[in-house]
Length: 503
Image (cartoon, rainbow, N blue to C red; front, side, top):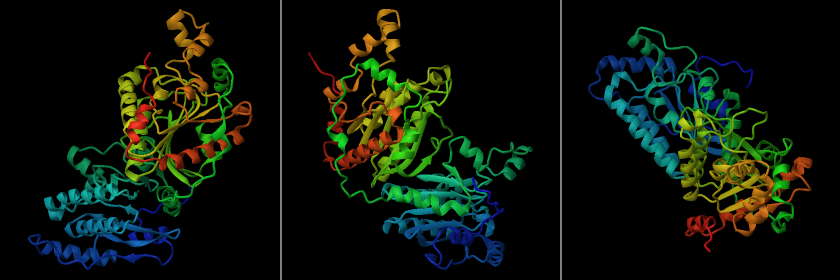
């Protein structure tokens, strides 16, 4: 977080000047005609005073400009014009701008700051939120990025429509954000709204938005997102040395012990040493976040992707992956499909959360839905077995067009000690069970589940950065390879990898 001081209200022009390259803004706005018929002379006078006060002709400005040299469409609220409220003229302006951005294939940045729909225009203004939402939906369905910067304050119908539909959503520090404005709540219920609920920071803590950033940092966030979302991935990477690596001769139990080393590189280190333009996302966007999963935009070499994977607990007793993790994962799957990006899943778990909260949160159902979505994913996909792969928590992220495995990774229905306890009523025969169950990489390669092995020299924990860089080159290669596979039979080929043998 920056130490930059937040001003109570950013004007539309101030935000445009802060975010767009200097002198690059071009307005798309046509002159506004008079108020809608039947609204009375009093409303016309309000509009006149609002224009005089704000220096704007309506509550939104639209147009295009450059962000770090990249052409971007913008829609920005002017709060000093009748509290940024949306009437018919403003709604028409927003819808026209979204449609133009879609027609011209431009990413769109929205910067709402609004009290909601305009009360002076009543239900017709309220219904215009449906039209705006339809335009945003068409923009997203065209595979074009829609980015949102929530400003202070954003409430009501704006927050409940075009303010909450971003592929990536960030907010101004300290911004008041919510459905019901606090003044309305107090008038209706005779008590103040609970403090610190409708704040940008609380929404971030609850997994509703991706970041809280001051306006001075917004251009960098937008540039990072668009660098991934609009990346040119046509370059074919060189074949990495790992393409010819064969599984090692170590026993399953040897690999399991190696994979449990706390110094072994995890997903965080893989992204730090092997990826670039990494932009973490946060939560499900529906009020949940879980430390058991990491979701991000990233590039490996020139290959962009949506990344989702297990966050290995850093300390004993930290929570394992729960149902909210998989709901966040499914947000990533939807992003990949909508934006036409490959999906990268990273598996490294000793097992999903085993708790009352996980059961009541629907963990089993979320594993099933994750499998359902991955098997039918329209986007190309790559999964990585990075270390431990125990149980349904591992299986939930496995299905993909190609699977890479670290040399000492493994995949098992349960940790071997659990399997031994079930079959032999003792954990002492875990090494024997691990070998018998075929959990090691050599068996997974033989079965066609693993397509690419990344060697460890001799143990990833002893060569952290070098291993991550080697794994990253393998990921770049496989992302490019699966993008080039025929799409017409992708789903059949993917499902066929996991078909059980007979006889």
